[in-house]
Length: 584
Image 1 (cartoon, one colour):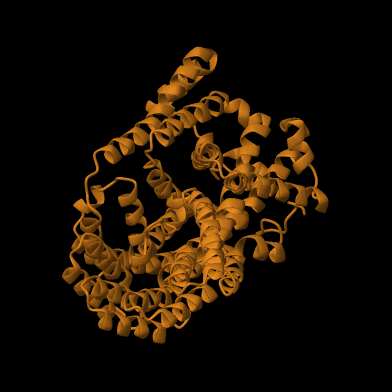
Image 2 (cartoon, rainbow, N blue to C red; image 1 turned 180 degrees about the horizontal axis):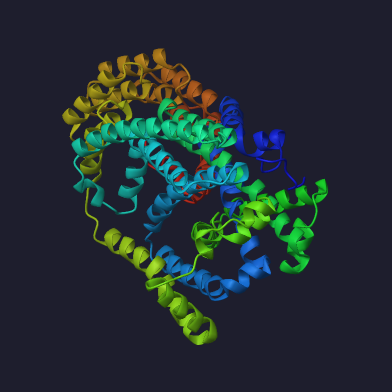
């Protein structure tokens, strides 16, 4: 691999398609194929562990391996991890995980800014950009991405469910009607900006400026994929995994190319291990680089394998600290306007173009410069300033989210009522509300909510079986059986519906039919612990002790596996919103 790219490309036409332009579409194809063989939760956990956490490592390699960069931000690179880890540790070990909400918001911003960065790189490589084109790139990306998030009821509900779980209820101050209006406004604004964007391209083309086709291509593939993942694809967990995989692969590639560019300027700019990884593009070195990334991401899986909650909490602190550092460091390390970025990533001609940092500073900027120089000369002052800044950046938000969690009093019913109003067309929102009503004993309102879910989507099988549970709890077993059978007719492989049908048969002492339903549930889902437990109880009633014991043992083993999986599901919920223990 080499960074001596043809004009206008980061690597070359073919490699750019593989690592940057076509990556979103390739990620979409690969994970949609994987979804035929694995659950969305398992795919998301794999991507988020080995890729999302793993992709923190390349940026940290640059921060602590590039001598020039480390020298410029030495105090920040030393102080930030200590401050972040301290506040995250306090929060985790006091049972407050609201900082995951902070990470979720930063994750959205990070994804948007990486794409914008690629647009600017292609622009600078192809031509001398105008200030207007840069601003239009930013606004077009921000508004279209914001629209996709706002228009995706599944993603929005998923995120707000996390807010409810971690004790942050301020979102309920926003009336659902305002969200509907915001979606419309953002769509019209995005369309208007698109017209202005195209108009500006036409004007610039007439003035002799070339059209930057790679920039347009990466925008098209990225937003087509994001739109499909968040709006067309109703499985938001799989959708997030698709976009995360594309983002991570792009990041792996751009960091390697940049660090290689650093060492092309001078090997003295990198520490020894940094030089070993990035000095040349031999395949075995690149593969070792990828292996390190995957190994770094694997610390979560390794901690889960220990089955030790203390170890897992420690690793949770490490993962969250790593994520905060990644988002924070990337915010100031990767500005295209910086001369060294142009030197290491782009052609030498573009590196010499005037940029914002090269302009003389006057007035307030001059005061800022003198203050920075003073901090450089007085190391104690520098470290003190950085510590106070990091406390403000990270400590205050983390403490605020812990405070809201400690005082949070919204019930599950209130939260689900809000979400059902926010997404009236989403069957799952009404179905979840029905479950919440039934859990507090309000079966009539639970039935009404499940019926609303069916009205929103008559093919949503889970709503039928949940409606059956509500009727069963009211004592109407005949109606319950009919509804479970309807759910099975709609989705024959819905193991939960077969299990629920078996429960109704068992209540009616129709033990043979109950056994058949439970066996079908475990045939569809071998890890269905409750179904194995029900089989054990039913076989015991029938006097079949060997089969009862076998299913008791299997249920016990699966319960231990569930506890291990609960650990993994708590690792990165800010990203996936993976279903929680006790959710139906």
